[in-house]
Image (cartoon, rainbow, N blue to C red; front, side, top):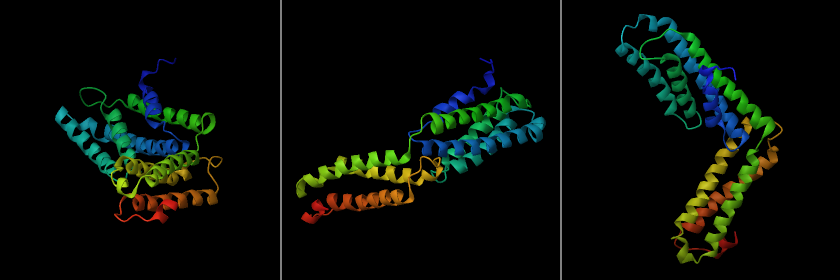
Amino acid sequence: ALDWQDIHTAMITCYVAALGTTGETIHKLILRIIGCLIGAAMGVLAIIFIIPHLNDVGELMALVFAGILLAAWVSSGNERIAYAGVQIGLAFLLTVLQGFGPSIDMGVALDRVLGILLGNLVVYVTFTLLWPVAIVDSVRARISRALVGLTNLAALSPDARASALREATAVEAELASAQEELVLIPFEPAQLRPAHEERARLKAILTEMSVLCPVLFLPTEKKHGDVRR
């Protein structure tokens, strides 16, 4: 409506930051904001202090390599912060690369960063006020599906369980995803967070199921008590 093309990154932000639950979304928004600010700061500093001294595309390529090297280092780290590295690289490139050669126009760069921040704001409001989805609901659904898988494993004869690889893999995947989601609960708004006791109960259930799945699937000698358990 404003014919402000340079903030088109707002729409991209809405696509990449919207996830299944509010906690996951806010976690990704935080990484996107931090990465955006770091990458944009690197780009603006490069525009002010480095780009005016560049003469050809080779020197610009060397600048881009240095900036992306830092972004790649962060991106190759722990998966809980890796997305920030992607965002550092994206914001840096959006700021520095504005044509086929060096440019010192900071207006376009700042507009693109504003677009990212605007997209973050829209997604945050949507997932906290208009369409909140609690992590605890997702965790309970995953536990339910994992229990169905464990029940199917327990119903098989001891000799047949070892060949039920798909069932066991599905159970392990659900449990791993549920445990990862529990870690992100602190990112949720206070009104969506479960009580500490409920969080501990869900964590204990997941721990018990994580122990039980290999007991049913892997050992050669199956115990009847494992099925009852």
